[in-house]
Picture 1 (cartoon, rainbow, N blue to C red):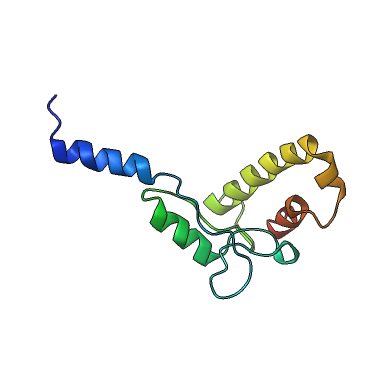
Picture 2 (picture 1 turned 45 degrees about the horizontal axis):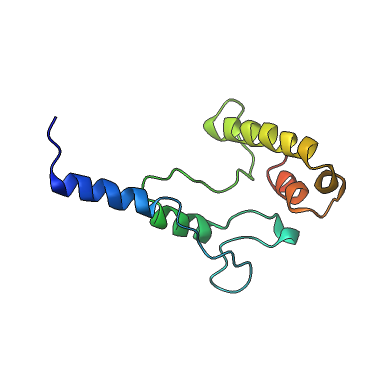
Length: 111
């Protein structure tokens, strides 16, 4: 199948743009991440900046509110809690510290 030069260039640019880092600020108006004391996750502004830098990304903010059992958000929460439980096993020092970013994020997600 023939692929035009424009399509090749577009694909190359998309691959180069993939996973651009965003500034890891936790203070001020340009805060992309929450400080550890506030739950240690990304802010809505940080998620928007990431999605702008990485077109096609499906990154979302934390599920922090009350959700209906079996809903998409409930499944996202269950998945995050399962993954972060694995991190608790892999990083016992962080797991034992109630003020670690891991424990604060789990608290924010209501794990």
